[in-house]
Length: 321
Image (cartoon, rainbow, N blue to C red):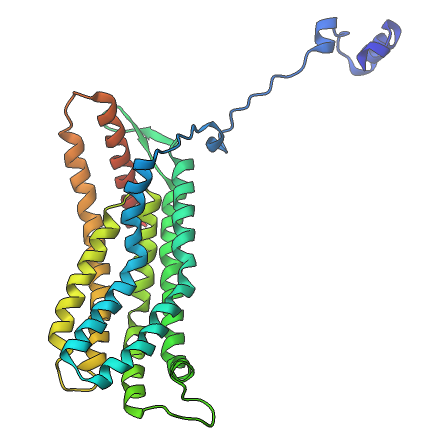
């Protein structure tokens, strides 16, 4: 402590260091510490706990992510049961089990994407890039954009890997489920062949399915609860129309269970295409709604305008990259 050093010792230190002897105030003064950190703006964020109404409003559309694949499989089962024979109907049960239950292996992508995108947007919400042409602060979201792009790239790789695995080992998985392994082989060749065709065709749509689920999860992380529902409805409509046209065809690789698989695969890629178009349309819609915002209820309108512009900025950055 400085209190143990007398005046003679301070004089010796002054000759060595070459600076005047510090005063009493200088001896006891401490540097000020600022808690504000530019590298960690999340420390300054204020978290507002949502009420039950907001939770329910957010949770119900979020179910669309988990219902997308089972709903498409349910449409396939209904169409094959009404328009095709008993053999094709019997083949769907193990085939759907392989595709849908196997799809749970990639469900980690959806949960992780929602959490990471939400956390990144929370951090980026206080970052200001500069001044725009209207003289207002423009925000950019480097963490959110990077997280979104990385999640989509990883989803594509996971979807391709998972689809390849199902396509190569679908026969082995079906034999395990249908009791076709071992000495007691009671497997019906016609049922097995129809189920294998369904699994291999559905494997072609796994990249689109995983990318759609990941993009929907990213939308939930950005508090967009409508887009997942729109994607689910679009996929269901396309799948229903495809089943109505293809299931009744007599060709083994086009009709029956195979036709239902083609309808589901086409609906997944169609939903992915429509999802991209919807995201391209939504920024323009958000800009139009922001420009027509009335002056009444100013605080509420500013809050909704900020959320819309935030979403627009993130998606525009994703398209630019």
